[in-house]
Length: 365
Ligand code: IPM
Ligand code: MN
Image (tube, rainbow, N blue to C red; front, side, top):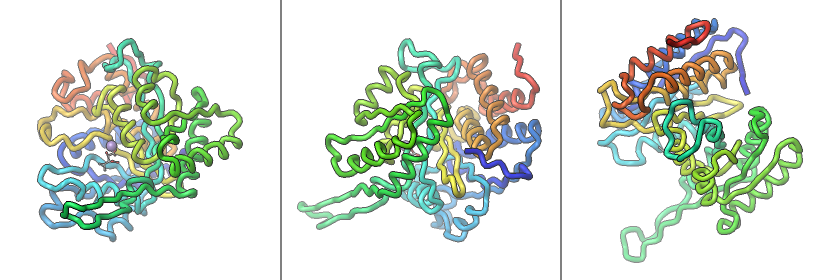
């Protein structure tokens, strides 16, 4: 998947965003810089101030001209979007979803991995039991904004919200998932998560495409689970999963459950990928307004998003080193992943990860 460019010089657009976004992104940048020094590649960061504050001041979410500019970068590194004074949907649709859709980032990749020393609410589950990846379709389904009102505001009001599933969109997502499962080479098992018993049009298409594409991947074991059952298995037997592929809405829901079983929003990261274009990497937790400016939020999710970005850019060795550094910190240092309960500040956690990333070998006292 890596697309290492020859000069190993990468231009990164940074959108720290709202709330604790800037604090965690600062730690992520710190770690990325340590990695670039240690592994000999170059990173240029260009910062953009889009988010709730800017919207409240100027009424602007993300101008089309900037969208064009974003297309010239090697990757985008995003903090968090969401502001308590801005009505729900404005920033999500105007910034986050706009980038995902306009840059055609059709895959949302969300690893669910329990690191050493991290508390999981699942009793008796260990790091080896919780290690799978969700491939979420990221440009279609219920997120298209297709639908509307009839007789709005009356007692006969009708609201329609349609799930759009195209053969093209479903197929490219499923193909990505098969390729990813092969490359990941863990159990080589891909599970389609759907709802074929009720959503008999949308998931019928998904199922047919899945079975068709599967024929080209005899080395991959395929499996199917309804979305409700997927939730059940994620809690009861997460070790059964290797890679899960699903639509936009189900992927959104099951990856929050995934984030919880891997230790919470302090650690969960994701990539919005356009394998032929510009991809964006983000911690999946929100802007956490109540912790803003207190230096208590956990930066590991943002650091992990940065790690995914390097891996995607082809700097796999550096990415691996950051992951080992994160594991050292979760395994041997942090008391908890929760904001304010880590036993360290945001900046101290970033310092530790950066320091271990820069070492030749990690060896902690
Ligand atoms: C996510 C978020 C977004 C989504 C919101 C903020 C629009 O929940 O990245 O999972 O629903 O995709
Ligand atoms: Mn979500």
